[in-house]
Image 1 (tube, rainbow, N blue to C red):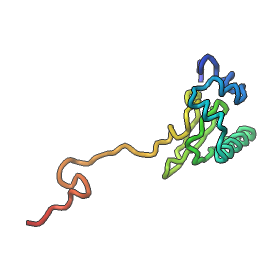
Image 2: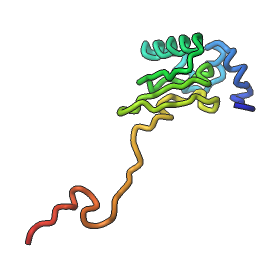
Image 3: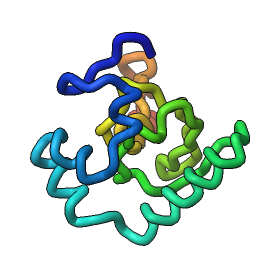
Image 4: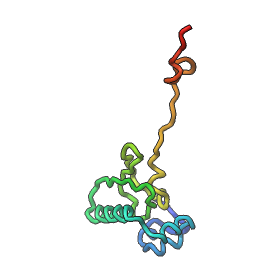
Length: 130
């Protein structure tokens, strides 16, 4: 993405930084999470991402790890995040950096109501006999 800047750093500069430098420029919430370290599940995801980047394969990585923070090295990858029912494919872009994977894989659908009145819902179909 052209002209992407995060706190005065371009995407290329962010990708060349090590984790300690990235920790210093993030917000306090992310800084605390990153200093704590990654969970074993997140570490497995990071290893799969590194393996995919080294092989330069154009394959989608599936994960249940919704709490993983999107790092600058993820840009350009295809990751499918589980929403509780299915895997939602994501193309990671620069403006997604330092968000969490779960933010882009919604777990609920928008409610669509039928016609108003009798039989609008399943429970309103019952009409007592007089």
